[in-house]
Image (cartoon, rainbow, N blue to C red):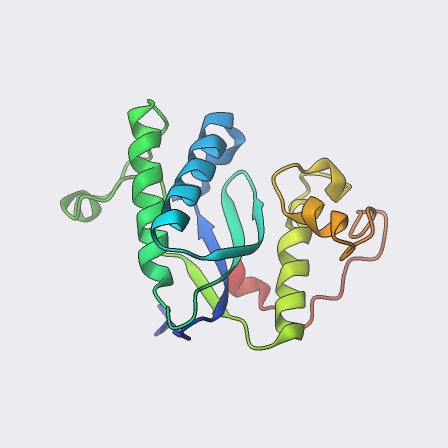
Length: 187
């Protein structure tokens, strides 16, 4: 396993990939999507962050966040989101994968992969490339041919704000140039 170290920038902007346990298609379920949104709002009220962009896929999500000035505690936010979501999901009778004895001893549940991937955004080009990568994901994974057909994405907000034309990224067009995004790390 690589020697992965997190990078902390107070007030920084970060790209995240968070994956379900065993890549179970948890977010194909409307209740799971509802609970995740509810929990993310709760945590944001307790520990503020700004969601610049987000996409929710059946077995993972990508998000771009900016933290408040002087704050670099994104792991605590994800820990709270995952814990609260897991509690609500299991309390509602949701699916839970079997975990190893070691994870069970640590009181881990089979809803999320234990870690998440983070990338610290370096500049405006890096932010734009990661927003494009995030928004293009439903097509990349073959879920839709047009991003306008994927409702669980900030793509629609970006179109309304004039950042993308409505047909941006459609499968019958040339895919966006996502320079500098290490796809192997993100998936």
